[in-house]
Image (cartoon, rainbow, N blue to C red; front, side, top):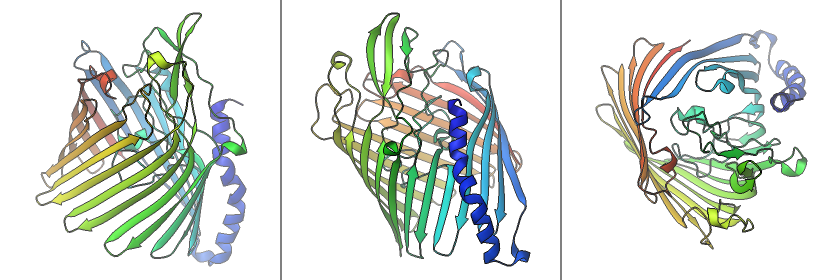
Length: 421
């Protein structure tokens, strides 16, 4: 059984296990006349093409996708699945069918359950990871894609217990899913030079001791929402080591356990919403400098925090700003990342022509490494179903320590069209 079929099987197995019993219970709990058994179908088709402005006219991306979503209600239970059918002209290995989500949802008066392949989102940060560490990320095109597409689903079981003011969510993830990195050297966003070979296969084994688990306790109070969370997880961005092989330099990914204690809050203040997140990461591992590859790996305690302000201003303006930082305690000089790093994000959106046209910009500013990624876009609604988008991604870096440094020459002009049904 190949890895994809195994992942698909494990994602759907919980649905099969609970499906029959929940269907029977759902139909026993309500009158037969109230049971809805109809499929709901929706989705979209989009096509995206990007041309590099610093790459002598090189195509940076060219892909077309069909996203389908199907859902069916049976009493208090819902079966949901979504998939992508993709044609990628630049990366043929990414052409094909991909199951995105497939889960069984059950909601009762004070508890709920979701089992299967699903997206799990924690925290209140916008496009920054502080406590939102369950969902891995797809960096095939780095950040030059919609953030909803960057987040990846996981095979998981979630249980929720709630009333009007308090909610407890428990989650277990039996299978490991790492970040999807651009390691194909034909990809303009590749993190590897052509002379370096990638040696994978070091993912944690499928066993009970490697299960990821955690919980989040959320409170909904007058004028304040906040949550406390704890997670025993894996670092899904690999720690990469380099060694000389028979045919050249070999890059090997490694994955390590870590613990996370988190807190987040959101407070509305008129037209402004104040948001914040904090996390203590226990035994987090970091990549080492190239001259310290023989140094044994060790885990560190790091502290991460974010404060954000959203202003829903008059005249159809939206301004969202965030400042986040991470501090490595007990820092060692051979760690590639600096002891303290700071990242600022700024989002500006202006709607015009009775909401038919939206102009926006989202910028990451790496304060520590003096690097930036800024996505300018114009979204025109030709009809309610058809949107035409034009944009420009500006990337740069002044220091090799910036996370944007490998992509400093990847500024691009892009065009996207989307039809929703």
